[in-house]
Length: 113
Ligand code: DGP
Image 1 (cartoon, rainbow, N blue to C red):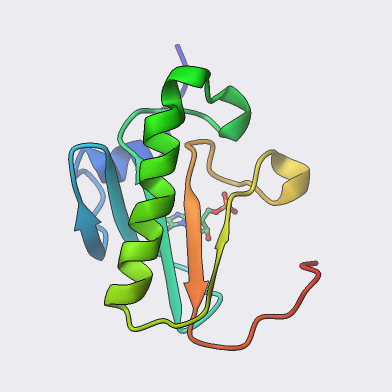
Image 2 (tube, rainbow, N blue to C red; image 1 turned 30 degrees about the vertical axis):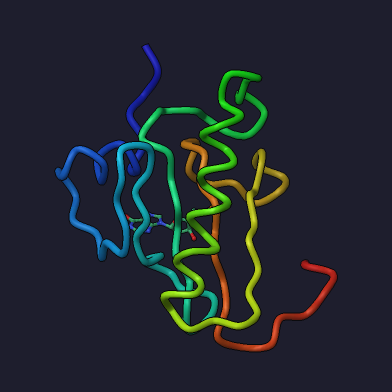
């Protein structure tokens, strides 16, 4: 059995979050350690560990996450923003439930560290 992540506990309501959006496929809430004035996580309700574990039949879900990020960015009055998906420990993934970071509200440098 795979261990429940913090995001599954947020999805079940066991751990509170600052919710900004919810629909049948995903939940979006403010990151607890914001790296910018706007830092929102968009997570699928389906427990996919990372983008590595996503399958062809998740195509609609993955597209939905991106379009939801754009919708939320507009709601947050962002003109420019960055979406990030960390995949694997060396890429900075710390929670093994797929999530998309929506980051904005300040100038963002490139390349990332
Ligand atoms: P990543 O490093 O890509 O796996 O991002 C995980 C993010 O999750 C990180 O930016 C901090 C955030 N996070 C971890 N625990 C919690 C929590 O309990 N609540 C919220 N809102 N965010 C969390």
